[in-house]
Image (tube, helix red, strand yellow):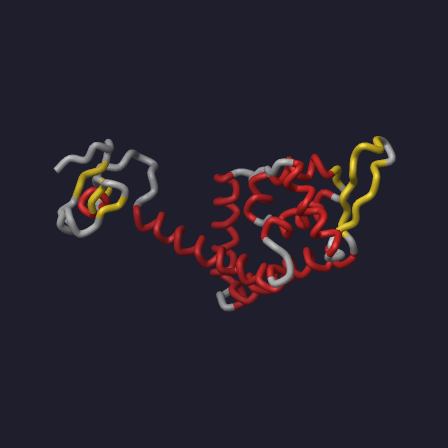
Length: 192
């Protein structure tokens, strides 16, 4: 049976009443890609292999964040990461980089300052603006996350032969070039 989506056919699946997700049945959700692919499109195995690698990388990221997230929230950590890479920022600019409203971000800065992660000071160029800067404790937190991530990645890479390490490096280089440079806002929303 032909799907309403171009390039996709419905496959025989579960009975219509087995699963109802927002008005769609399990049969509606059982889709497979038609074999006549557009030239240049990656095959399903390549996409699945890349998905598997992305889950492994996500696990490395999560483990590297875990010790810091016992004390601060992911949103607070994102602020620290930006400050660590960009230096002292005006509170409003930092809120914009994080994609949050400045009034909401004021509470985040209050909590970070109370915890000793950042300091706030009056902007010498404009007394109406507040500058936010990492404290040594905040710097250590960002460094710990980065060090933990490098350690985890190093352990994984060390388990590979030198030839496989070169293949991984080349594959990641090509993937990064194809994806392009993520924006600072995008990275900040993901934990940097």
